[in-house]
Image (cartoon, rainbow, N blue to C red):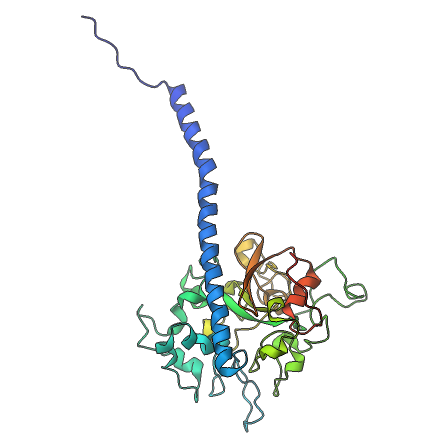
Length: 352
């Protein structure tokens, strides 16, 4: 009986099969990545929704938005700056929200008569990861899983938060020259007469990057909080709570104050404006040169101190009424500034 020869793939057939598999993987991988990003974005949206609920719960008790750290308090014999240690440091607005987001145990370790930041730097009972302080421990609700810029190396571990409250359309300092926060567009003569388009478009956010000075006057704050110890009452959102941004996404490694040593409770870190366009590129991971005089550098406050995300095409925000909106990074600039401003006189809706 004649024996049959063993059948096998020829080299050409094997290459064809490999090519087909490669094509299928190439087609499926983007779909898988898109599905994963959709899930991450939904989790991020849920976090913002929870923050929106905590805002309203906080307001129900204190009748205003939470406030940050005292700066140059006239009640003190020797005024203290919010970036220096001392009992004037009361933490960020996120610290004030802790008991309203199931973090009462952590909140109860804080004695607000003293330096809050120093206390959180030394919280041992919550040191689950064997680290020295709270800077390297994430509160889950403060993290957006889409952020690919933070937490990769030890020097970035204090960036474990992705949400910040809005100081609105304030007249932001640049820290080294002036920048076009939205090039090629003028507003009532701005941008064509030597004045760059940017903050204080509606004459209600005059103070530089939310630094409201010793009296913390709301009249100089366009948004819902100041950089220091002022927070708006809901009645002061005269454009309507659904038309005012309360908080939004940030990429801490893209702004020198967001990435500052104290992370989410850093007294000098929680100030973010709508003045720069959404996703204005100040992130080194996107090929930005290390140059403090470059408007795309993370140390230029006018551009870096804006809302940013790793979502494609925009970022998510929680409005004053607690609703969550995705705003395109191509949104009309003036419309975006009106959403950042609580009292510009126009109750415009979302216009991406």
